[in-house]
Image 1 (cartoon, one colour):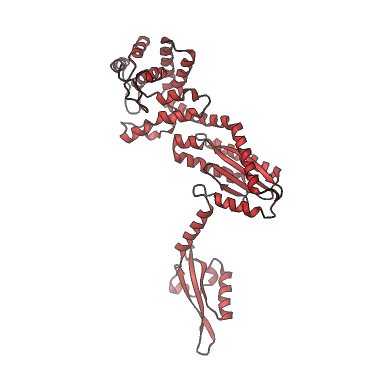
Image 2 (cartoon, rainbow, N blue to C red):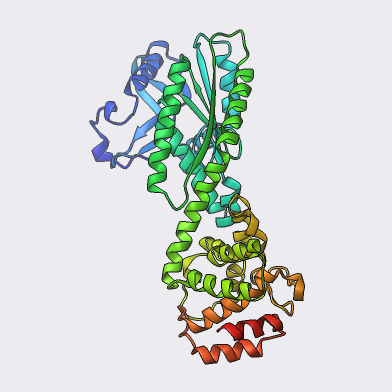
Length: 426
């Protein structure tokens, strides 16, 4: 069980073999003094290599023929797997599996226990993770899990070691601070803001936003559950106050990532904006439509921030499964744009910018004039720019070759009237 040979085992002090030698001495001494065996007690045993195993021991006395005590006999059984499994079950019963923080059940038990304690004043802090749904919808649940772990790390860094920090809902966290007045809670919240800022400086690609509220119970007159609800109300007030700014911070991070990728595409968005503006003016779009069209040219690929680089910049043709992922970017971009006051007006255009005149586009297979005119204009300009510039998987075509392809696609991929407009300006 513990890695020694019989010869090595003789003469070793029991203090070297057990993690709690005092408990071992007391147990053997009890058997010696009472003469009664002890069965089924558990000890942490130290293996020769330093690892810990758990043994279940039963001990009794050995007597000689005259009835004198001459030694002990024992039986030890390795129960390490069982103990570790029980510890894991106990941990899972009290902790959130993703973040390692305490869970809602343990938090509720502590509220109940502390409500009858002498630990007052007790401060309760609630924190809500902003933008979790947007991250899940855009980048997938792995990104959402990353945000949740980040929030747990930020909160853990801000609170004290004896504070009770729990994940009490999908994107909700709470802290119990015993013997803490209003000023003490304010200091913890300020430390939380500092921790959050430091985190975001290191993770600018997927920034973290937390809305926070706190309330303090000075004595047991007011139930802690009511104090918790009050802290929660203040947290939601904070979320409403800071909501737009926090969402925009996330959008700014997405746009920054998009700009980095456009740099690789050598000014794709800038060229599109110029072509779309010239076409839009030719067909006499309104100033509002021209503004939306210019913005669409800049952010149409917003959803590609959620497409893996291995697909986005793959050298060679995409597989059917990779195309499925790639074609999800209009819907991802639509969800991101809806979360931004500045981009919500072009969210529908982002969603429909890959629709085709004959209904062969995606995601909704719209046909003809059911496709917004801004998207029909954009489709032609985008195709021309894509054909005439190098991509990771092919060399760009000549301008003349690209124009011939656009002519051939009039009435299928493209609005035929808008193709004529395009040809007249290029």
